[in-house]
Structures are given as structure tokens and as C-alpha cells.
Image (cartoon, rainbow, N blue to C red):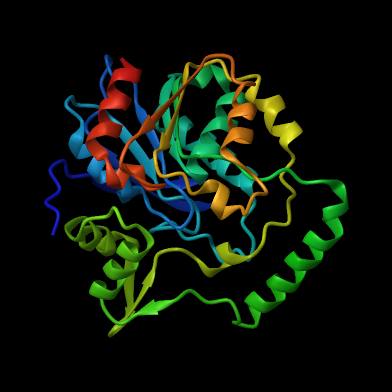
Length: 300
């Protein structure tokens, strides 16, 4: 199994009536700008371990498990609203970095949270890094009736127990699932991640640490005009990091392309785009040394 080099401290912080699980690496100091790392959908804070190990300098790093992921329980939510992630992050920074700017890094969903937060609280962000956070296809008002109807139907299904997460017979099966999802992932890293990505709920029954309600379709439409209005308020120098293996166009079946994403990024005043070779969407697992080098160079 992968030998972690920098061991995180695991703790819980009261945030907005939830007991938020947070991992920290390194120690705070007067000469250190905190790094805040935000994981993606159906992921956990420990996912950044490989990048943290590849860093060449000591940093104070804060990484939360989002509500309903990892060890942060949602309190029984049957719906997850995207603005809650923004308010959760705001409270997290109040706790760990009051009156201080931070270097904010987000992967995938976390990258989208980071971009929006940096436009809403521009004074709190020193440097901003988006790892494969592409946003969603634009929507139109006529989609609202169908979307809200779908959401109501899925909420009913959830409360009837019809929406469940897959279970696995062993950690080896969990690791195999991770490798199946990501052909770049090595076996040693997959087995290390499996221990943080899943828990044994009953003898011989492992499930990923993400609540089933995350599978419910969002009731909110994604409105690009609103997103771009927020992007225009981003003041921090921003680094967009993309994987060489672009799966976005295929994932969205032509509804949203990399070219459209780049067009949206023109709304960010101070932006650089870089591509990491030989990796996929989980680039922080696939090329942690390259990602770590980019982060340290950009933060400096």
C-alpha cells in the first residue's frame, strides 16, 4: 500500500450546525499563507495526500470533507444545495484564517466552489487554483418545470429507500472500483485511497463515504450568465489546471465542450491555463508531483 509521508491531523469543527471533518497538514505560522484544498463530488479530503507528499516545502494545509462526504455527516439531508458549500467554506475560513487571505485550490466540484467563492469574497483569496473544475452546461428557463418535477420525484424515491449507494464485499473490491474509474491510478494508491474513501458498515459490507442523497438531481438550474457575473469579480491571480486526457466533451455528450469552458474563463481577469500530461480527471492522483510543482510555483 502507498506509504504516506506527511501525516494529516484529523479533527472536527462546528460549522453551521454540522460537525465538519477537516484534515490539516503542517503547522500555521506568521509567515505562512494557509492553503485550503477542496475535494470534488464523491471524493474526500484525504484524496490530496499524494500531492501533499510531493510538495518540497512545508505549508499549512486545510482540507475539509464537504457536507455529506467523508466523515462529515449532513444531519439527514435529502437535498444538497450548492450555495451551502459556499457558506460552509466561508465559516471554515473564519475558523482557520480569520482576517487572513488564503491560497484556495479546488478539484472538480471543489474547483467550481473555489471559483465562485473567489468572486464572492475576492479579498480573502491570495491565489486561486482550479483543478479540472469545468462547470456545467448552460440552462434555459423552460427547463425549470421538468427539473423541479424530477427533483421532487427523486426525493420521494430517496425516502422510500430506492436510492442507494453500491456496497462492496471488501476493501480490495473498493480499490478495484477506483482503478476501474481511473486507468491511470496505481494499485498501491488505490488501496490507500480505499481506506479513506469507504467504510465497513457491517461485516463484509463496505460502502463509499458519500451520502445517497447526493445522487438526487439538483433542483437548481445552472445559469452561466450568473456564473460569469461572479467570475468578473475574481481579483486573485488564477491558475486553471487541465488534464491532457480530456473526457469532458464525451461526458456531456456535446452539450458542453472544452472550447466553451475556455470562452467562459475569459471573464476571469488574471488567468493562466496549463495542461498536465499523461493524466485524466483525477490528475492529483495520476500526476501528484507535477501538480505539486505547479502549485508551489504559482503560490510563490
